[in-house]
Image (cartoon, rainbow, N blue to C red; front, side, top):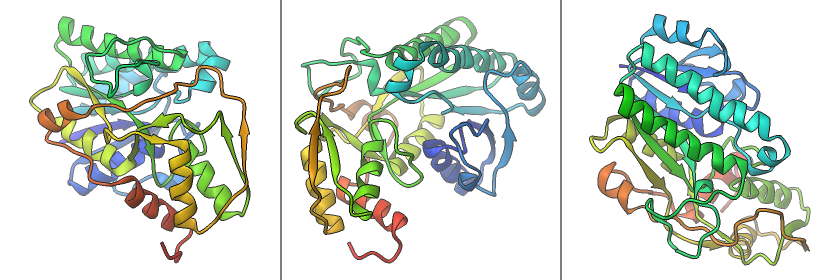
Length: 308
């Protein structure tokens, strides 16, 4: 079985590649290395340096005849989408359509798509389930929601199966200091360096933090699930405030940092926690790492030998 992982040298994509290689699948990575890294590339996979917007993508997929595609390549931050909406659209929408056309013409069986909790926007209906109204507060969220619409139409018109996974706030090893989950990486690195922390707002804002290996497992399950052609939340269904997160990180690192509270960020969602029962029931998946367990693994990766 031959699987292409776009963005497979990136944070989440590389963990997906790891689990696919471990399952003895024939794995190819497509990544332009704009944010991915050579150090993340699994030696058991074939690496192709290429952009999802490249014109010759159709030719590549026609030659290689992939069975499945896991699409992780994207512009991934709210802030960047607001600063440069054209680029966000170019990568997340035009790049996706270019890939979908290549999949359609080469008879790919199914595409698994990295969507986001950002499609929901700010809502008082918590926990958020998949049927909740969707009102993105950023161009990033809008581009992910538009991507889901394209997937649905490609299935209805051309029979290309899909599963869209709406990630909560992913954290873990190999993560850069960006995105919602990136706050964990930022805080950990600052704590280990003995620096203070900056919190935007009063710290009561909440997120649903999910460990990257749980996300990778969800992608693997989505490749073969019978309940396809719909969107699923991939989350812990647990709400954690920034203040609670800081307390846990301080406990694990044995650091008591000075904390500065800055002004709340524009377009910042106040509370977010995603229901995950649909994925548990239909993908035969569930998160297995608590926040504390995931943070311990991430901390040991950043500072080998640390006692936590």
